[in-house]
Image (tube, rainbow, N blue to C red):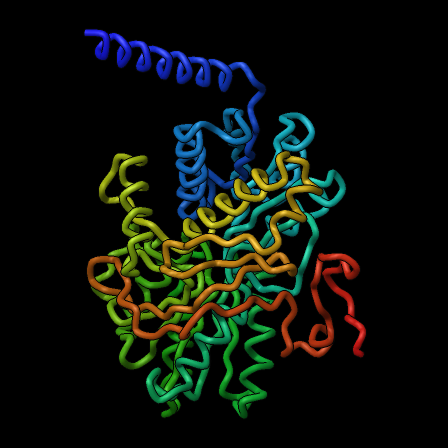
Length: 425
């Protein structure tokens, strides 16, 4: 009886400690995490799931006792695919809501819109989507792919015997900074590889473009020249749905003219009839089909949180996951959410990613990540057909653009510079 009494007493003490901890967590001011993703408009098809990913991560860390003994609170705003509104909402999050960090943006034009706000107010943004590079800010950590981690390897793959030995290239994109800069890099790369200007077709369309009949007809005509042709797509948002539909209507099949996309993942395919898209490609750093224990746990966590077995995971979700994990580790290491302290603690942070690799944050504010080429399957998933042997370190500045080739990004002392020329010794 005495032993049972002692056990009951110990359990009572543990219960009291847990109750006290929960009470303390509730009483202390929360650590605020801003969520800056479009929940309406043309980009909602891609961005809504990233909002949900941040909420999942916030829920998870609170279940584990919070951060620095405090509850983490997500502050969600909707910039509605309106680029100037992104800047307004960013200012609102930092100045009015007093958030400690922001996870957000998808398009580069939205990131460019908020960049001056974060630099003026010394806020901290984690940007989770592939982009064109040619940027390095002390206030932004880029957890998506740079061109040398997506666009360049994808084209090199298609040029190879394994990828079909493509000779002619259609660079099709939405008309804004990411496609235009990426295609500028790709055009320079292709020409450096001996591709003639006549074998490169470039086309841009506005956000939400829906009438693809003429453009797809032009692509079909361009591909009829007798050389193996591929489409490199930087088309963003809901314009992808009618684009792929028109490809099928025109009888353009992957075995004849493969499309490799940089902005179409599992989430976008969920809204498309994929039976006519089998064989087309996408280049990312993660696919849901990756086989790894961490990915199994990630998918399980996602489905349990979202309470919908049909919801998929994708690359920008993984990039959000990596960024959030690294930020929490940096906050714990620094012992504070102070932006300057967290920034310094971010360098060298490592996270075992769902993609089955250890991701590292470099001093240029970009990650080292592997590159994967996936082939669309009838079920809306990707079969991985090629990947790099290991992580590739991101280049903030492209060596294929002459004015950028000499630049470096290194935010550690004594350089503290995102676009300077490091001295040679």
